[in-house]
Length: 214
Image (cartoon, rainbow, N blue to C red; front, side, top):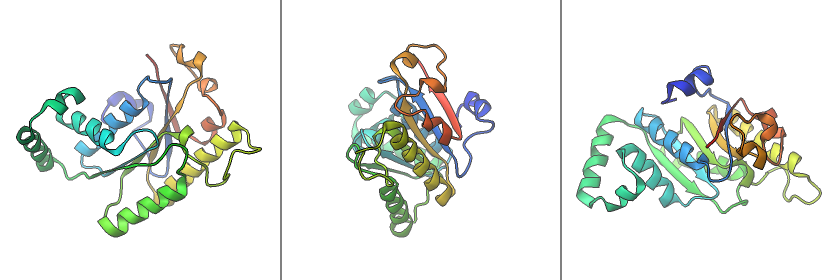
């Protein structure tokens, strides 16, 4: 990780074939955290794929670029073209990390789609990610259950977690995702695994969990 505190908490950083999860309440910064980490991994030469079910690809690129350039997204929009291209060129000279963002409609994509994406990137673009971000767990679909009819949220969300972890093992890469805290957990200064919304089963499939609070 680019932050020593995260390296300490994760015992050295993200591991291959692992699934990690950021826990946070609504609008606390799950996507911002993943965008920040994406930019920092790129800065160190890592290849990053960012899959989102709620943010458009342009917005993802905007957030990652703002982080790389060390400016706010508002100031990024005000930057003139020549200044922007000059700064980007300077970054390219310092790192060979590559970035790819993909947006899917909310609740429509599952690991089958993600698997196809990763294979296509490898075949057509010679692109193999070092880390994949999936934003976020609860609004993915399950490849195991086609609908939620007759399935409770515990089983459905747990299945999504298991499928994502299986994908991490299949490709030998770490996957980072996020999930919501309950209303009560969002107001706690130190929420625990019982504060995970929808499915406590999420905790059973994760290799590493971290909670972000306001």
